Image 1 (cartoon, helix red, strand yellow):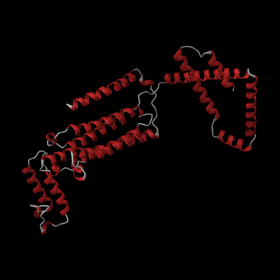
Image 2: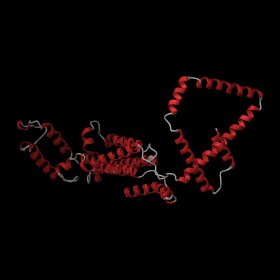
Image 3: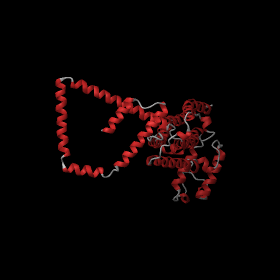
Image 4: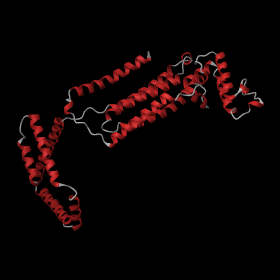
Length: 362
Protein backbone atom coordinates (compact mmCIF):
# COMPACT_ATOMS: atom_id res chain seq x y z
CA UNK A 1 0.00 0.00 0.00
CA UNK A 2 2.74 2.43 0.92
CA UNK A 3 4.68 1.46 -2.21
CA UNK A 4 1.70 2.45 -4.36
CA UNK A 5 1.44 5.74 -2.49
CA UNK A 6 5.16 6.39 -3.01
CA UNK A 7 4.97 5.62 -6.75
CA UNK A 8 1.93 7.87 -7.19
CA UNK A 9 3.66 10.69 -5.32
CA UNK A 10 6.77 10.48 -7.48
CA UNK A 11 4.66 10.39 -10.64
CA UNK A 12 2.65 13.44 -9.59
CA UNK A 13 5.80 15.35 -8.69
CA UNK A 14 7.93 14.29 -11.64
CA UNK A 15 5.41 14.07 -14.49
CA UNK A 16 5.25 17.86 -15.16
CA UNK A 17 9.04 18.00 -15.11
CA UNK A 18 9.38 15.10 -17.59
CA UNK A 19 6.62 16.52 -19.79
CA UNK A 20 8.39 19.87 -19.94
CA UNK A 21 11.63 18.18 -21.04
CA UNK A 22 9.76 16.21 -23.74
CA UNK A 23 8.03 19.28 -25.16
CA UNK A 24 11.19 21.39 -25.18
CA UNK A 25 13.08 18.68 -27.05
CA UNK A 26 10.19 18.01 -29.44
CA UNK A 27 10.11 21.62 -30.65
CA UNK A 28 13.85 21.73 -31.22
CA UNK A 29 15.50 20.44 -34.36
CA UNK A 30 18.39 18.13 -33.38
CA UNK A 31 20.55 19.23 -36.31
CA UNK A 32 20.44 22.86 -35.10
CA UNK A 33 21.38 22.17 -31.52
CA UNK A 34 24.72 23.43 -30.33
CA UNK A 35 26.31 20.87 -28.04
CA UNK A 36 27.92 22.59 -25.10
CA UNK A 37 31.55 21.35 -24.89
CA UNK A 38 32.46 19.52 -21.71
CA UNK A 39 34.83 21.44 -19.51
CA UNK A 40 37.36 20.02 -17.08
CA UNK A 41 34.90 20.58 -14.23
CA UNK A 42 32.15 18.71 -16.13
CA UNK A 43 34.43 15.72 -16.62
CA UNK A 44 35.45 15.84 -12.96
CA UNK A 45 31.77 15.85 -11.92
CA UNK A 46 31.04 12.79 -14.08
CA UNK A 47 34.02 10.93 -12.58
CA UNK A 48 32.86 11.81 -9.04
CA UNK A 49 29.33 10.57 -9.77
CA UNK A 50 30.67 7.33 -11.28
CA UNK A 51 32.81 6.73 -8.19
CA UNK A 52 29.76 7.39 -6.01
CA UNK A 53 27.69 4.90 -8.02
CA UNK A 54 30.45 2.26 -7.81
CA UNK A 55 30.77 2.79 -4.04
CA UNK A 56 27.03 2.41 -3.48
CA UNK A 57 26.88 -0.59 -5.83
CA UNK A 58 29.75 -2.39 -4.11
CA UNK A 59 28.21 -1.66 -0.71
CA UNK A 60 24.84 -2.95 -1.89
CA UNK A 61 26.21 -6.16 -3.42
CA UNK A 62 29.01 -7.20 -1.09
CA UNK A 63 28.36 -5.59 2.29
CA UNK A 64 25.59 -6.91 4.47
CA UNK A 65 24.83 -5.41 7.87
CA UNK A 66 25.87 -7.78 10.69
CA UNK A 67 23.06 -10.05 11.80
CA UNK A 68 22.91 -12.95 14.22
CA UNK A 69 20.23 -14.60 12.10
CA UNK A 70 22.46 -14.54 9.03
CA UNK A 71 25.35 -15.91 11.08
CA UNK A 72 23.23 -18.76 12.47
CA UNK A 73 21.47 -19.30 9.12
CA UNK A 74 17.96 -19.17 10.55
CA UNK A 75 14.88 -17.10 9.68
CA UNK A 76 14.11 -14.00 11.71
CA UNK A 77 10.96 -15.55 13.16
CA UNK A 78 12.64 -18.83 14.12
CA UNK A 79 11.36 -20.45 17.34
CA UNK A 80 13.64 -20.44 20.37
CA UNK A 81 14.42 -24.17 20.16
CA UNK A 82 15.81 -23.74 16.63
CA UNK A 83 17.60 -20.57 17.69
CA UNK A 84 19.32 -22.36 20.61
CA UNK A 85 20.17 -25.41 18.48
CA UNK A 86 21.90 -23.39 15.76
CA UNK A 87 23.56 -21.22 18.40
CA UNK A 88 25.19 -24.24 20.08
CA UNK A 89 26.31 -25.66 16.73
CA UNK A 90 27.85 -22.35 15.72
CA UNK A 91 29.64 -21.93 19.08
CA UNK A 92 31.10 -25.44 18.90
CA UNK A 93 32.17 -25.16 15.25
CA UNK A 94 33.69 -21.71 15.71
CA UNK A 95 35.24 -21.71 19.20
CA UNK A 96 35.53 -25.37 20.14
CA UNK A 97 33.73 -28.13 22.02
CA UNK A 98 34.54 -26.61 25.42
CA UNK A 99 31.99 -23.84 24.72
CA UNK A 100 29.09 -26.23 24.02
CA UNK A 101 27.43 -25.37 27.33
CA UNK A 102 28.88 -21.89 27.74
CA UNK A 103 27.38 -19.71 30.47
CA UNK A 104 28.69 -16.12 30.69
CA UNK A 105 28.05 -16.08 34.45
CA UNK A 106 29.64 -19.47 35.19
CA UNK A 107 33.00 -19.88 33.46
CA UNK A 108 35.02 -23.07 33.41
CA UNK A 109 38.84 -23.15 33.43
CA UNK A 110 39.02 -24.58 29.90
CA UNK A 111 36.81 -21.74 28.61
CA UNK A 112 39.24 -18.98 29.57
CA UNK A 113 40.82 -18.40 26.17
CA UNK A 114 41.70 -15.43 23.98
CA UNK A 115 38.24 -15.68 22.37
CA UNK A 116 36.43 -15.46 25.70
CA UNK A 117 35.29 -11.85 25.30
CA UNK A 118 33.92 -12.47 21.79
CA UNK A 119 32.08 -15.57 22.96
CA UNK A 120 30.69 -13.71 25.96
CA UNK A 121 29.29 -10.86 23.80
CA UNK A 122 27.80 -13.25 21.26
CA UNK A 123 26.25 -15.47 23.93
CA UNK A 124 24.77 -12.49 25.79
CA UNK A 125 23.30 -11.12 22.57
CA UNK A 126 21.77 -14.46 21.60
CA UNK A 127 20.32 -14.87 25.10
CA UNK A 128 18.62 -11.46 24.82
CA UNK A 129 17.23 -12.21 21.36
CA UNK A 130 15.21 -15.10 22.73
CA UNK A 131 12.77 -12.47 24.04
CA UNK A 132 10.30 -11.35 21.31
CA UNK A 133 10.42 -7.68 22.31
CA UNK A 134 14.21 -7.42 22.16
CA UNK A 135 14.31 -9.49 18.98
CA UNK A 136 11.84 -7.08 17.34
CA UNK A 137 14.00 -4.10 18.37
CA UNK A 138 17.11 -5.86 17.03
CA UNK A 139 15.49 -6.59 13.66
CA UNK A 140 14.00 -3.11 13.41
CA UNK A 141 17.13 -1.06 14.10
CA UNK A 142 20.00 -3.42 13.33
CA UNK A 143 22.78 -4.99 15.34
CA UNK A 144 25.03 -1.92 15.46
CA UNK A 145 22.33 0.25 17.01
CA UNK A 146 21.20 -2.50 19.39
CA UNK A 147 24.70 -3.20 20.72
CA UNK A 148 26.31 0.26 20.56
CA UNK A 149 23.58 2.48 22.00
CA UNK A 150 24.35 2.40 25.73
CA UNK A 151 21.69 4.96 26.70
CA UNK A 152 18.79 3.56 24.66
CA UNK A 153 15.90 2.29 26.77
CA UNK A 154 12.76 2.85 24.67
CA UNK A 155 11.86 2.52 21.02
CA UNK A 156 12.16 6.29 20.56
CA UNK A 157 15.75 6.21 21.84
CA UNK A 158 16.72 3.56 19.30
CA UNK A 159 14.94 5.52 16.56
CA UNK A 160 16.85 8.73 17.35
CA UNK A 161 20.16 6.85 17.49
CA UNK A 162 19.51 5.13 14.14
CA UNK A 163 18.45 8.33 12.38
CA UNK A 164 21.52 10.15 13.70
CA UNK A 165 23.75 7.40 12.26
CA UNK A 166 21.89 7.38 8.93
CA UNK A 167 22.19 11.17 8.62
CA UNK A 168 25.86 10.81 7.64
CA UNK A 169 24.78 8.93 4.51
CA UNK A 170 22.46 11.77 3.53
CA UNK A 171 25.09 14.43 4.28
CA UNK A 172 27.55 12.67 2.00
CA UNK A 173 25.08 12.20 -0.88
CA UNK A 174 23.80 15.79 -0.61
CA UNK A 175 27.36 17.13 -0.63
CA UNK A 176 28.20 15.07 -3.72
CA UNK A 177 25.02 16.03 -5.58
CA UNK A 178 25.37 19.67 -4.51
CA UNK A 179 28.87 19.85 -5.97
CA UNK A 180 27.80 17.99 -9.13
CA UNK A 181 24.75 20.17 -9.81
CA UNK A 182 26.65 23.43 -9.33
CA UNK A 183 27.81 23.26 -12.96
CA UNK A 184 25.78 24.68 -15.85
CA UNK A 185 25.41 21.26 -17.45
CA UNK A 186 23.90 19.66 -14.33
CA UNK A 187 22.16 22.56 -12.57
CA UNK A 188 18.76 21.39 -13.87
CA UNK A 189 19.03 18.60 -11.25
CA UNK A 190 19.81 20.90 -8.32
CA UNK A 191 16.23 21.09 -7.06
CA UNK A 192 15.13 17.61 -8.11
CA UNK A 193 18.13 15.80 -6.61
CA UNK A 194 17.46 17.39 -3.22
CA UNK A 195 13.77 16.55 -3.57
CA UNK A 196 14.52 12.90 -4.38
CA UNK A 197 16.99 12.55 -1.49
CA UNK A 198 14.42 14.12 0.85
CA UNK A 199 11.89 11.59 -0.45
CA UNK A 200 14.27 8.74 0.42
CA UNK A 201 14.70 10.16 3.93
CA UNK A 202 10.93 10.46 4.40
CA UNK A 203 10.50 6.89 3.17
CA UNK A 204 13.03 5.67 5.74
CA UNK A 205 11.39 7.59 8.59
CA UNK A 206 7.93 6.41 7.52
CA UNK A 207 9.03 2.76 7.50
CA UNK A 208 10.41 3.05 11.02
CA UNK A 209 7.33 4.84 12.36
CA UNK A 210 4.73 2.52 10.83
CA UNK A 211 6.49 -0.73 11.76
CA UNK A 212 5.01 -2.80 14.58
CA UNK A 213 6.36 -5.69 16.63
CA UNK A 214 4.46 -8.36 14.71
CA UNK A 215 5.76 -7.25 11.31
CA UNK A 216 9.25 -6.61 12.68
CA UNK A 217 9.68 -10.31 13.54
CA UNK A 218 8.96 -11.40 9.96
CA UNK A 219 11.97 -9.69 8.37
CA UNK A 220 14.87 -7.39 9.14
CA UNK A 221 13.49 -3.91 8.62
CA UNK A 222 16.93 -2.35 9.04
CA UNK A 223 18.42 -4.44 6.22
CA UNK A 224 15.46 -3.68 3.95
CA UNK A 225 15.81 0.07 4.53
CA UNK A 226 19.59 -0.09 4.12
CA UNK A 227 19.32 -1.88 0.75
CA UNK A 228 16.57 0.48 -0.42
CA UNK A 229 18.65 3.52 0.52
CA UNK A 230 21.70 2.33 -1.42
CA UNK A 231 19.58 1.36 -4.42
CA UNK A 232 17.76 4.69 -4.55
CA UNK A 233 21.02 6.61 -4.17
CA UNK A 234 22.39 4.69 -7.17
CA UNK A 235 19.32 5.61 -9.24
CA UNK A 236 19.52 9.30 -8.29
CA UNK A 237 23.24 9.57 -9.09
CA UNK A 238 22.75 7.67 -12.36
CA UNK A 239 20.02 10.09 -13.43
CA UNK A 240 22.19 13.10 -12.62
CA UNK A 241 25.17 11.52 -14.41
CA UNK A 242 23.31 10.54 -17.60
CA UNK A 243 20.91 13.41 -18.24
CA UNK A 244 22.17 16.95 -18.85
CA UNK A 245 20.48 20.22 -19.64
CA UNK A 246 18.51 20.07 -22.89
CA UNK A 247 18.18 23.81 -23.51
CA UNK A 248 21.29 24.40 -25.62
CA UNK A 249 20.53 27.27 -27.94
CA UNK A 250 20.35 27.04 -31.73
CA UNK A 251 22.15 29.40 -34.10
CA UNK A 252 18.96 31.36 -34.63
CA UNK A 253 18.37 31.73 -30.88
CA UNK A 254 21.94 32.88 -30.31
CA UNK A 255 21.65 35.41 -33.15
CA UNK A 256 18.37 36.73 -31.79
CA UNK A 257 19.90 37.11 -28.33
CA UNK A 258 22.88 39.02 -29.75
CA UNK A 259 20.54 41.26 -31.75
CA UNK A 260 18.44 41.99 -28.67
CA UNK A 261 21.50 42.92 -26.66
CA UNK A 262 22.79 45.09 -29.49
CA UNK A 263 19.49 46.96 -29.68
CA UNK A 264 19.59 47.47 -25.91
CA UNK A 265 23.12 48.82 -26.18
CA UNK A 266 22.05 51.25 -28.94
CA UNK A 267 19.14 52.43 -26.80
CA UNK A 268 21.49 53.03 -23.87
CA UNK A 269 23.81 55.00 -26.15
CA UNK A 270 20.92 57.18 -27.31
CA UNK A 271 19.89 57.75 -23.70
CA UNK A 272 23.45 58.75 -22.84
CA UNK A 273 23.51 61.23 -25.73
CA UNK A 274 20.26 62.78 -24.55
CA UNK A 275 21.63 63.10 -21.03
CA UNK A 276 24.76 64.79 -22.39
CA UNK A 277 22.67 67.27 -24.39
CA UNK A 278 20.52 68.03 -21.35
CA UNK A 279 23.65 68.54 -19.26
CA UNK A 280 25.38 70.88 -21.72
CA UNK A 281 22.37 73.22 -21.96
CA UNK A 282 22.99 74.38 -18.39
CA UNK A 283 25.99 76.68 -17.92
CA UNK A 284 27.00 75.37 -14.49
CA UNK A 285 26.67 71.72 -15.49
CA UNK A 286 28.53 72.42 -18.75
CA UNK A 287 31.42 73.98 -16.82
CA UNK A 288 31.59 70.99 -14.46
CA UNK A 289 31.43 68.66 -17.47
CA UNK A 290 34.29 70.43 -19.26
CA UNK A 291 36.43 70.61 -16.11
CA UNK A 292 35.93 66.93 -15.43
CA UNK A 293 36.99 65.81 -18.91
CA UNK A 294 39.88 68.26 -19.01
CA UNK A 295 41.15 66.69 -15.81
CA UNK A 296 40.73 63.23 -17.32
CA UNK A 297 42.63 64.28 -20.45
CA UNK A 298 45.50 65.57 -18.34
CA UNK A 299 45.65 62.32 -16.36
CA UNK A 300 45.51 60.30 -19.58
CA UNK A 301 48.30 62.32 -21.19
CA UNK A 302 50.49 61.78 -18.13
CA UNK A 303 49.92 58.05 -18.26
CA UNK A 304 50.47 57.80 -22.02
CA UNK A 305 53.70 59.79 -21.79
CA UNK A 306 55.15 57.28 -19.34
CA UNK A 307 57.80 55.09 -20.98
CA UNK A 308 57.07 52.24 -18.58
CA UNK A 309 53.38 52.27 -19.56
CA UNK A 310 54.19 52.27 -23.27
CA UNK A 311 56.61 49.36 -22.88
CA UNK A 312 54.04 47.27 -21.03
CA UNK A 313 51.33 48.23 -23.53
CA UNK A 314 53.42 47.21 -26.53
CA UNK A 315 54.41 43.97 -24.80
CA UNK A 316 50.77 43.06 -24.19
CA UNK A 317 49.69 44.02 -27.71
CA UNK A 318 52.44 41.88 -29.20
CA UNK A 319 50.85 38.79 -27.64
CA UNK A 320 47.73 39.18 -29.78
CA UNK A 321 47.28 38.77 -33.51
CA UNK A 322 45.23 41.91 -34.12
CA UNK A 323 44.73 41.23 -37.81
CA UNK A 324 43.33 37.78 -37.08
CA UNK A 325 41.08 39.15 -34.34
CA UNK A 326 39.72 41.84 -36.66
CA UNK A 327 39.12 39.25 -39.37
CA UNK A 328 37.27 36.94 -36.96
CA UNK A 329 35.16 39.77 -35.60
CA UNK A 330 34.23 40.82 -39.14
CA UNK A 331 33.16 37.27 -39.98
CA UNK A 332 31.16 37.04 -36.76
CA UNK A 333 29.43 40.34 -37.47
CA UNK A 334 28.59 39.17 -40.98
CA UNK A 335 27.12 35.91 -39.63
CA UNK A 336 25.01 37.86 -37.15
CA UNK A 337 23.67 40.11 -39.87
CA UNK A 338 22.89 37.14 -42.11
CA UNK A 339 21.03 35.40 -39.30
CA UNK A 340 19.15 38.61 -38.59
CA UNK A 341 18.03 38.83 -42.22
CA UNK A 342 17.04 35.16 -42.06
CA UNK A 343 15.03 35.68 -38.89
CA UNK A 344 13.27 38.89 -39.82
CA UNK A 345 13.35 38.71 -43.65
CA UNK A 346 14.42 42.36 -43.78
CA UNK A 347 17.53 44.48 -43.86
CA UNK A 348 19.29 46.10 -40.92
CA UNK A 349 17.45 49.13 -39.47
CA UNK A 350 19.00 52.49 -40.45
CA UNK A 351 19.86 53.31 -36.84
CA UNK A 352 21.71 50.04 -36.47
CA UNK A 353 23.67 50.75 -39.66
CA UNK A 354 24.53 54.21 -38.41
CA UNK A 355 25.78 52.87 -35.11
CA UNK A 356 27.72 50.14 -36.91
CA UNK A 357 29.47 52.69 -39.13
CA UNK A 358 30.22 54.86 -36.12
CA UNK A 359 31.80 51.89 -34.32
CA UNK A 360 33.94 51.04 -37.34
CA UNK A 361 35.08 54.64 -37.64
CA UNK A 362 36.04 54.83 -33.98
